[in-house]
Image (cartoon, rainbow, N blue to C red; front, top):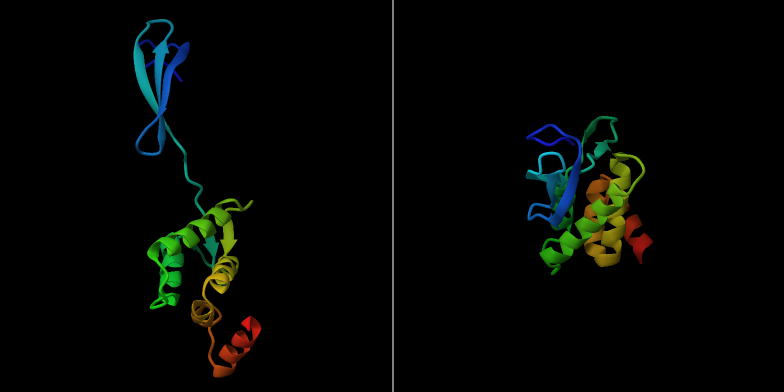
Length: 147
């Protein structure tokens, strides 16, 4: 970091506080020219990539998880707040993984595990689409597993 006035590298931080846009504001003073200026630091979000079952890659979209969960919980008396908490938990788990490339299968398993604990009907709804059920037998088999 250099002073924008005299180009000196001798600086000190005189004040530090959180800013309203998830950044840190630092008030700095140049030791050479004694002028003050502010800098802002923002955490750079990790970009997650989803590897689809066909091998293609696409950027992670939280909205897709939220939409899938919301559709599976339609008319199930679960609040939007609860849905947001579930999506937050899943996203937090994804962001703590060692790799930034995650399979859609892994993400689907996280969602189904959360739904299985929350609401069995929503679990069956989501799983039927996630696993691409094509016969009634698939539904019956899945229901037997959760009984």
